[in-house]
Length: 565
Figure 1: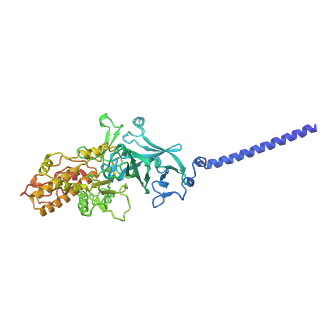
Figure 2 (figure 1 turned 90 degrees about the horizontal axis):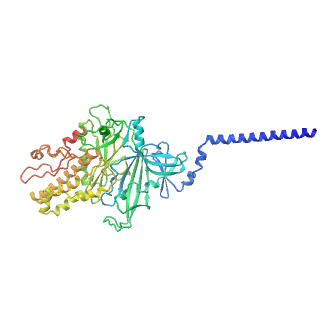
Figure 3 (figure 1 turned 90 degrees about the vertical axis):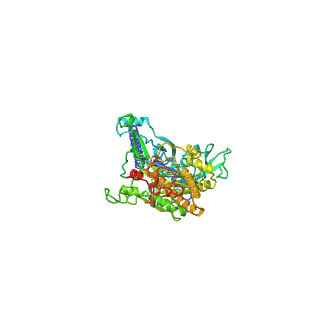
């Protein structure tokens, strides 16, 4: 009996000990689970290598703005580019503009060329699981939110997934870090469509140090395209490897009170068109906004005259020859006459770039007038816009130096037959047109036209110089020829600036004035020879013995003022 009691007591104590042990283990598990709940990122972060192991301080270069932040923090290691995708830019619209920063001396791959300039795209970084996708948004179709039409649009039109990047690590602040090398060391601009038989070579390409600012980042790539074919380019030493500078400017869309303005067919503006399925009628679903700048008024918004809150500033690149800076500057500022009629004082300004300036002409924050030497003999005035509203955000005019030289070459080789051909024959611009046909997206949307004004102008200058030499002795003809060049240069500048202001060509304005009015000395210092500088006007050359006025327009025309107003 005593043995039974002893065994009972023993088993009772054993059960108590086991229960106590289990309870303590449960409490320990609860404590562990509590720690995990308080720092949920610890387990997920353990999937990635530590930040300092992937990007050791001694091996990495960091790029931030002056305040230590910027649109994106960038890191470089062994010519690999990494970016911290913070919550502030995840799922946010970003505008990416692509430019040719260094060309091959032949059109269309010339320095300063805006690439894909008729197809400004909005991009987003989106996280899907352990990857970050680069999405190009489809913004050409829309409908009012929370409507059946909006659901139908979502079903019919999708965004484009361009890249899916694995999360490489987490930053010290917990944001995902991805390697951007696959994006920018690639043929993202589709230049291989122009360089037939060439392909992008990632091993032969390299990054330049990027620049980070509060609302934009600037990424430059020395890209190499290779070919095993026997292609030849006179401007490169070995056509098997073409090196091209590609610049990517990535920026936030500005937060402004800008109000889009609907287009009117009676006024020639480039447009941003969006198909709105909330509108009734199949033929009336497109919404067309004109492309224009957001100036604002610095003083009282409804003041009759005021300086702009955000003036249009063109930076004259230091590559522009000194002797041509004045007519170019005057041509840019001539548009202030139109803005004054619209209520703005000093809306268009010019600043000369100096040797001390370290910014890049491709930087989206700067509008530039660039002088290039590519043997192409053209000028171009593209602008880049917000694809949601038509607000112009950036403009860069490129002017090829050979425009000035062409007239000399052709003038020196003129024969009576070639002069006669110029008065009625077609311009030889087919080669130039063909060189542009392969540019991706050219013609898709029209806020940068195929402007061939310079090709015609070079012929006009050559013809005019020949005519002057026939009317005057050599010294006087040379003096008048120099005057004609400066006037022609100013007119081309006004024409290209007009494009950057959103204006299309106007080919119906040539006959607003009579010949006597054209050559009257009244107001000769600032006289328009046609109704618009957006026309392709010939040189004004009078027969010998008759009054000779200006050779080209020296100010904008009445249509130009009306269009801006």
